[in-house]
Length: 38
Length: 566
Image: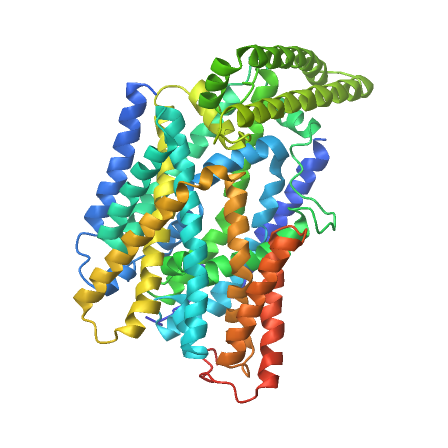
C-alpha cells in the first residue's frame, strides 16, 4: 500500500509549484478583470 | 417540467444509481464497505473528492450569491490549492503509513483514545448536521419543480440516498461520483451557453461582461484588511487555508475518499487535481450567476424568485403585490433605457458615467422592492423565508431553459446532492464503527461489524433527514453550511497539527487543549463580531498554543509518545 513510485508527470515539488502557480495566475487575472471592467 | 425533461431526469439519475449499485455488488466485507478499493486511479479519486465537496447547495446557492454580491465568494476557495499541496506533501503519507481507516485513528496512535473519540464526535456532530442542510437544498428544488411540500421531497431524496449508500458503502459512493461529475460538468457548460444565448438580440457576451463590471459584479479580489468583512483575499488565503486543511485533512467524508486502500501516489495526485480544478470550477459557477444577473438587467425579473411563494402571496395580498410589481416595472424601464446608453458604441465617457449612475440607482431600487416583497412574504406566509437568493438560478432555469435541458439541470442538482450526501453518510457510518464500535467490541466478527456499519449509515441518514426538516429557517444555505463547519474545524485541525508537529505534547494536554479551543470558538461565535472564516484560525491557534503550555504544566501527561511522522 505504501509503494510510491512518484508522480507520472515529474517531481513532486514541480507539481506543487504548478498548483500554487496556477492560483497566483488566477488571482492576478481576477484582479485584472475587475480593473478592466468597472 | 415537460415529459422530455422527466425522461432526461429519471434516466440520468436511475442510470447513475444502477451503475454504482452494479459496480459495488460484491461488497461483502467491512474492508470493501468502508474503503473504496485498491484499484482506484487518481482521476477517480480526484473526481470523488470534488464531487463530495460540490453539493446541491453549490449549484443553487453560488449563482444566487453571485447575483447579489458578484464574484467575491471565490476568495473562500483561495486557500484550497495550498491546502492540497500541504496535505499531499505532509499528512496523506502519514495516514497511508499507518494504514488507518479514519483520520481519528491516528489520534489514538499518537495521543490516546479520548482525544480520538472527542475529535471523532466533533466530526459526527458537524457532518451530521451539515448533511441535513445538504438534503434540504435539493428537496427545495424538487418542491419548487413539483409543487410538493418540502417535507415530502426531503423524505424522498434522503430516503433514496440512504438506500444506495447503505447497500454499497464507500465503493458505491466513489464509483457513482465519477458519473455524477460527468453530468455536472456537462450541465454547467450547457447552463452558461443557455444563459448567454438568452440575452436579447444585439447584446453580446462582451457587452454582458462590461455591464456586470459597471454594476460592480466582477470584483473577485478584495485587498482590504477588514476583519469583519466575510470574504477578502486575506481571509480567503489564511482562513480559507485553515478551513480547507481541516476539511480535507480531518473530515472523514473527504479522508475516506482518498484513503481508498490503493497506492499513496494515486491519493496525492487526486488531491492535487482537486487543487487545480476547484477555483476555476467555482469561478465558472459564480460567473453563470453573474450572467443570470446580466440577463435580468436586460429582461424583467420576477418580483420574488421563489415562484410558489409569490403566487401564494398574490392570492392573499393581490393589491400590494400589484403595487410592488408596478413600481418594479417603472424602475426597470428607466434602467433599460440607461443600459442602452451605457452599452451604446462610441458613447462618451461622460455619458457612460451618467448612465452607469442611473443604472445603479434603478438596480438599487429594484433590489429594495424585492426585499420589500420578501418581508411581505415572511409576514403573510408563516414558515416561508424572506430571502429568495437560493431560488434565483432555479427560477431562471425553469423559466428560460429549453425542454430537455431543464431535466438535465435538475439532474445536475440531484446528482450533486446524492454524491455529497452519500459520501457524508458513508463516512459517518465508518467513523461510528471504526472509532466507537470496534474499540468497544474488538472481538466482533467481520459480518457483525459490517451489519453495524450498515445500521450506523442508515441511522445517520435518518438524523440528517430529521435535521433537514428544520433547515428552511436558515438564511443562505451555503453560508450556513460553511459557518457550521467553521464552528468545529479549527480545533479539529489544531489537534492534528499538534500531533504532527509538537512531538513533546501527549494525550491529556492535547485533549484539554482541544476542549479549550472548541469553547473559545463557540464563545467567539456567540459574543463576537468576526467573519466566520476566522473561527478556523482562532480555534486552531488556541489548540496549538494551549497544548504545549498544558504539557509543560503536567510533564508526565498520559498518551502514546510514538511519533508516526518521524
